[in-house]
Amino acid sequence: MTGAVLNSVVRGLCLSEKQPPLVRMAVDREADQIKRAAGGDPAAIRAIVVRNTAPLNALAYRMLRSQEDAEEVVQETFLRAWKALPKWKPNAQLSTWLHRVALNLCYDRLRKRREHVMAEPPDMVDETPGPQGQLERQQSITKVRDALAQLPERQQAALSLCALEGYTNRMAAEILEISVEALESLLSRGRRQLRSILHEQAGDLT
Image: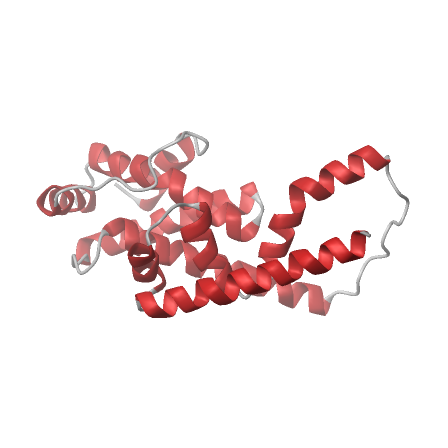
């Protein structure tokens, strides 16, 4: 079985299908599943993909705010996992490692976006106002997401994992490869900055 087959499996799954944020499995069962997946067992590959697709997609979408980009990150994450499985060493849960890979892919895309914005001249902004009700509704829906997107990458990732995706501090720290104390510091700084941004936005609307 090739990476193209795994890619086909990933594409065939519904990314909107709701799965639990984390499914705890016995170490021996997961190790056996990884071994079978590395050997090309379609059932084992599908089980890993189904269990991890929804939480990975949710995290990537929070970071990138683009469903298309999120799906591409999820697919690339699983393709990298496929290449790594034959040499997999169970130093951490597979789901934790997958989240690390997905986060790094998100960071790469965010950096490329910033480079593109700096390289291209800004477009003229259309200042034609829309209907007042539609504008207020849009502001209400997007203001928190906009504020979150302005945070530094690590703060954004910490808040996305803990506040939005429901991961414990310990697991979020493992995904980010930092201590729990460092994670709590990121969360504290992120919340303060988020409140500050929202406060400034509220002032701009008055």
